[in-house]
View 1 (cartoon, rainbow, N blue to C red):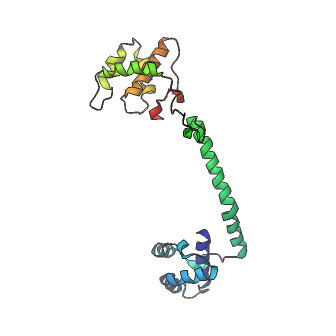
View 2: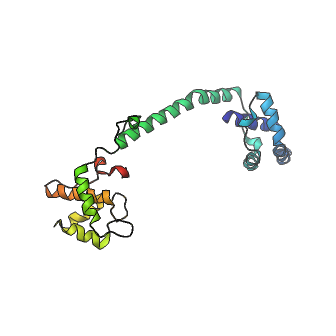
View 3: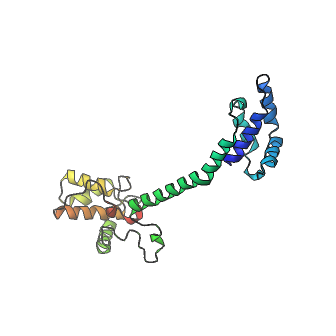
Length: 219
């Protein structure tokens, strides 16, 4: 497409006068774009399907001055062809490789690992299945809001039983509220319970929630 645009603009530019009647000539060329496109396609053996939308292309060029475009040289086209054939594909490969590395660092999952039939997403969650079952039963016994979430006074009452001070519970809540909704679902509640248990066992609360602490369904 870049080559097609270059040839079109070059063809239109070559038909512009040097001084007088620039505006009138440009308007005439833009009105005659269908014919201009056919001429360029035939001259350079280009598929018509690669040509831009005529009304849109006309609208863009109407705000520009064709006479001020530089003349297209063989050197410029060779450089463009080199970029399209070598430099841009190399750049796209680099971007793709960077995205894979970034994804692996963020999720801890290597490329194609999810296709493994034994892959278990989030299988490394800090909350064990046994503990999760206990926390789920406890969660269902609490006074939840209409959306089935723990929030407000019900949350205060639920966590007051931990006998931790307000500052500690504030931090526990901030860490467990992964969704940022000021309410906890069953997974976030299980995480909060785990954090409380760890703290009471003498382990400090993390400053930032580690990836393995984030509920699998919320990663």
